[in-house]
Length: 508
Ligand SMILES: Nc1ncnc2c1ncn2[C@@H]1O[C@H](COP(=O)(O)OP(=O)(O)OP(=O)(O)O)[C@@H](O)[C@H]1O
Ligand SMILES: [Mg+2]
Image 1 (cartoon, helix red, strand yellow):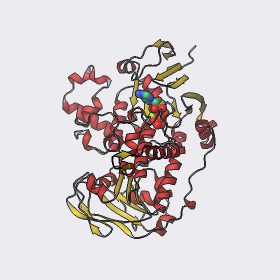
Image 2 (cartoon, helix red, strand yellow):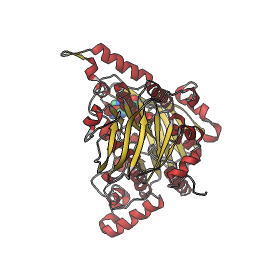
Image 3 (spheres, protein in one colour):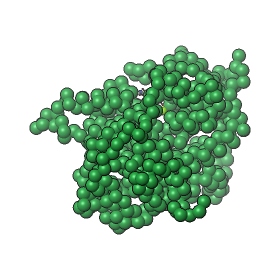
Image 4 (tube, protein in one colour):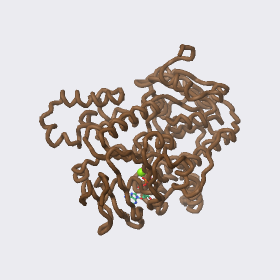
C-alpha cells in the first residue's frame, strides 16, 4: 500500500569496495512535500540521492524503488529522468566551455523533442527569462567557465527548474550563495511546492532547514535515524539525531585577539573585476570580507594569491613590495589560500588523503633523502581527529570522500602549513555543524598564534562571530571597512546595508 507517495525508496543498501555506506534506508516523499535530508559529513546523503538519480546502483538483490506505487528500475540517469527526477549535485557539473543557455537546456526534457526545433534566439530568450526570474544577473550567452561558483550554482538550479521534474533533489544548493540569493531560491521552492513538485533539500545550514522544509529525515553513518515533521524538531533535537550527542556552539566572547603590525597591505589594486582595492591586514587578526555573490571577494583573493592578473596596484608584505605573478610567488611570500572551488584549485582528487594533506608541508618531514613517516602520520592523525575526517584510511583517494570531508582535507592542508598570511574563501562550505565549530576554533587559534587571517564567507554569522574587522565589497569595490569598535557593535543589517551598495550616511 503506497498511501499517496510519489516516490518510495525501500530498504536501500549500498556497499562500496571495503565500506557499507547505506544500511536498510527507507525514504518516501509525497507530491508538494519539501523534505530536508540531514546528517554529518559522510553520513550517506549524496550516495542515497545518487542511487535515486541513477548515478550509483543500489546493492543487487536489495531494496526497491517505487514511483506512484509501481516498482521501477533506475539503472541510469535517463531512467531517473523518465520518472521525473532531477538532481542538482553538490559538485557543479556544468560544461564550462559552453554557454549558460546551452547548459540550461542540456539534459532537460526539451532536448529530446523541442530542442531540435528551437533556434538559438528562442533558447536564449527562454533561458534568460528563467535566469531573470531568479534574479541571477547574468547574460545567458556568457560561457559558464567565466562565472563564479555561486553563479554556476544558480545555473544548476535554473536547469532543474526547467526540467519539468516531479522530484527535485538539491544537494547543498546554497553552499556558496548569500542571503539574497537564498531568498530567491526559496521563493522558487515555494512555487514548485504549489505545483505539487516534491523537493529533497540537503543542507548543513540549520536556519534554512526550518525556513523551507515540511519534514526532516536524518541519516547517521549510513543508517536511518528517523523522519519527523519539522514542527516537532528544533536545532538541538536535530543535532542530537545527527551526532548522537549535544554540541556546544562557538561563541565569540571566548576569543581574545592580540593584534600586531600590518603584514599585508594591498594598495589600489585594479583588474578586470576589481576597482581600486586597498586594505591592510595585521598579524593576529581575522579580517572578514562580506558582500553579495559577485561582489568581487573571491576575485580579490585570487588577485592577491597570483591566480588572476593585476593591471595596476601594489601588494606589500611586511612593508616590502612583492611581485606576485603566480601561486608559487604567493606561497614564497608567506601566503596560504583555501580556495572557493576545491575541485579546481584545492585538491588533487585522484591522489590520496595523505598526499593532499601533506603536500605543502612535506619539507618539514624530509631529512636528507628520508621522509619522517612517523611525523607525517602524526600530522595526519591530528587533523583527521580534530575535524573528524571520515575516511577508510589515509591512503584512500580524495575523490571517494564525501563533499564535506574533501573540504576538510583542503582546510587541514593549509592550516598545517601555518603560513604568515592565510586567505580562506568559504572555508566551511558544506561542512557539518560539529566540524564547523572545530574549524572556527582552529581559525581563532591561528590568529592568536600571530597568523593574519583573511576570511571570505557568505555565512553572515561566520563573518560576524570570527572577524576582528569587517570589509564589505560591492561590485568589485570596497564599500566600507568597519573598525574594531564598529565590528563589535555591528549587526547583520549594517553589513547588508553596505553589501547592497549603499553608503554609511545614506538615509534608510
Ligand atoms: N565512489 C565511492 N567509493 C568509495 N566510497 C565512497 C564513494 N562515494 C562515497 N563514498 C563513501 O560513502 C560515505 C558516504 O558519502 P556521501 O557522499 O553519501 O556523504 P554525505 O552524507 O553526502 O556527506 P557530505 O555532507 O560531506 O556531503 C563516505 O564515507 C564516503 O567516503
Ligand atoms: Mg554529500
